Image 1 (cartoon, rainbow, N blue to C red):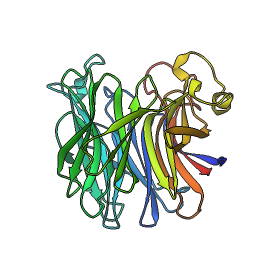
Image 2: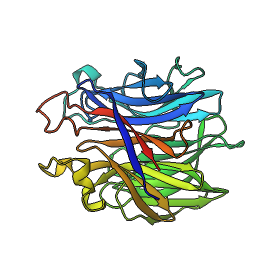
Image 3: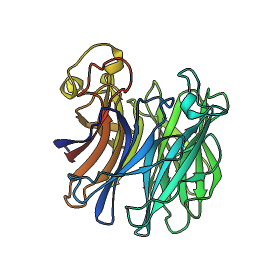
Image 4: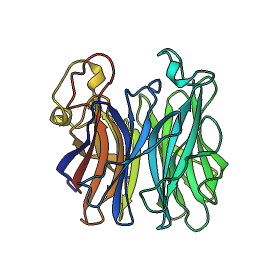
Amino acid sequence: MPATLLDVQCVAATGEHLAFTDLTSWCGHYYLAYRQALSHHPMTPGHLVVRRSPDAVTWDAGVTVHTGGDDRDPHFVCDGARRLGLMCGTYAYADVPLRTLHPQVRPQLLLSHVTWSRDGTWWGLPLPLFRWQYWIWSVVPSDGELWRAAAYHSGDAWDASSIHYLCSDSGTDWLHAAVIAGPSLDLGEPFLWPAGPKTLGCLVRHETQPAVLFRATHPYGKWTGTPLEVLVHSPVVRVVGERTFVAGRSRAEDLPRGVADAAYRYRKGAKHRYYTTLWELEGTTLRHLVTVPSAGDCGYPGLVADPTDDGTLLLSYYSQHERLPLPAGLPCAADVYVARIRV
């Protein structure tokens, strides 16, 4: 079935690096989250902004969520109508005050956090989750028994990541349940979702090669992986009816002919070859639907079905396509967008 890009709204453009979005609908409102910093790099620490809208068009000024480290990659999790959660990863720095960081200093520690809200306007103190160096990337809320999550773990040397399946009875205290994939130089950003009765899917980013689709059946102790045909960075997966949609960052060579030029025509070097794309997952095949206007440092989308308009998806993402070519120095600007797509 074809897909149509209905419109794209620039929601946030301050001249700073606004990035790593997520989007959800909860209790009659839409919620958008993103990181605000001077650049993509964790050496310019950022905080999270959470904004609310009744219609995904008019957004409030937002509230700030900050742990004191570099907070990034927010992901919403809905606990029914009881509460809305926001998870993120936080870089901390060993023995180096944030204000004295030199660009060559590397982040030493990483910890996942969650903050909860019962009304969508007031957010509680961010709480640390699980263990150091485990990044809880995606969460499946309780199905009446357990919460489930996928995380990736970086060792002390930051030279490889392994993908892990976690369980919780509260959404706050997590236990390690299984290894999805062993250590690899290029795996990360695992997105977990219910892929059928007693079945979980986990789509995992590979840095330079096609993404890997893992599946497991209850009790989810054994996972099998299948490489897909296209590269997908920062994947997000949403099941709408009997269809499964995937959004993420793509590269020109994985898109149909002419699509990259339509998304952005500027050409000057390989660093602008990334785009933000929506696919449909059919078995182990990703079928291209839409590539939204984007280029450069972009992607990290949020994806939600529009509850007021059947057959329409809302896609949040960030991009530099309206800023290129970028001036030297900081801030390295990127803007946040919300697209409406008829599927």
